[in-house]
Length: 429
Image 1 (cartoon, one colour):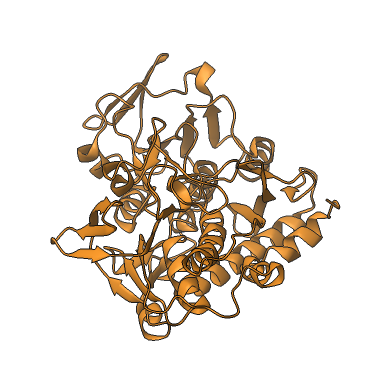
Image 2 (tube, helix red, strand yellow):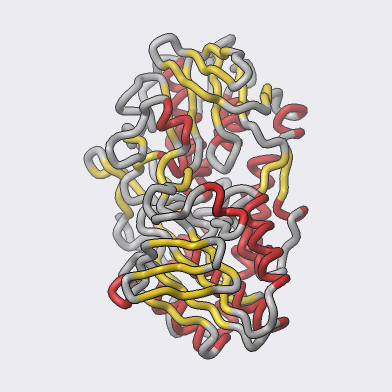
């Protein structure tokens, strides 16, 4: 493969890049014969909403039902900007009206509680059963509350994870606003793998921006379960330039692993001792969403093994699993990845329903991280199948330069904003 420059790569992976690729390589069907077939999509986030829309775009005769309990979807990407007082809750909240009205998708606001692959049925929380010809499952992640002693669902009212949904993020936002100047914020990132964005290091950056403006005597301590983290040199350099000594990071060897929590007294405990915080943000380890686990679609890792060509479950035929819950080779668990996987999977399902051959294609991902308003960094890559596993293509994408001028950081911030507007419009517009 010809090596491409970072600029050429970024031009090629716009939100609609995969859509164009599908048409170019011929797996976007020109004549579709799957009339009256029914595809159910469970989960209405970056993967599910995109998949439902593209199924109907590819075949307007296909019946598509989207099952999502939340009527107003709050995006975890860009939620850190809310914590930095750079975005409002309203700006990050979207609805499903256009998917219903413009694309004819049946949207059911309910929780799926069971998937029976043998009978091809989805059971909803009210007992309603939906039958399907193919199913796309995009359930996101759940928190693993079994990994830290004394930290469970009851504790998130005082020590929120702010990692999924509007409620938990809003709790953390209000805690930061209520904290006195000179307070201490503790952030505890999870072990790998985890869903990102939101990213814990972007979160620390934007909270530091908020503190610099309104509570400049305050500090942030990061107790990390890992020895190192992605884009670490870029973050460390940016923190020093932007925030001085406001942020201190402790890796696992330096006592970063959280062993126990006392939410009543706002304490975290590591092997090096106890630390009291005025605001504590613990992000637990993660695994596949509950419906995937309850439907026995996960392996011992807690994630869903899939055929990385079609994203069909290796455990149950007829069920395609995309997004954060899927084991997708070296593709990260991100909104951008879920969006790409959704388009490819929609095309694959149309092909399979029409008994057509499924053709391998490439996918892409870019993860942007804000360190401050007008200051962002990124990492990007293209992914292709090598054997049976998705791997990053050598020479594709890359990481922001450590020596980049401020103008480049400003440009990346603009690209990030453009990406968000484009991808959410594609999902919901």
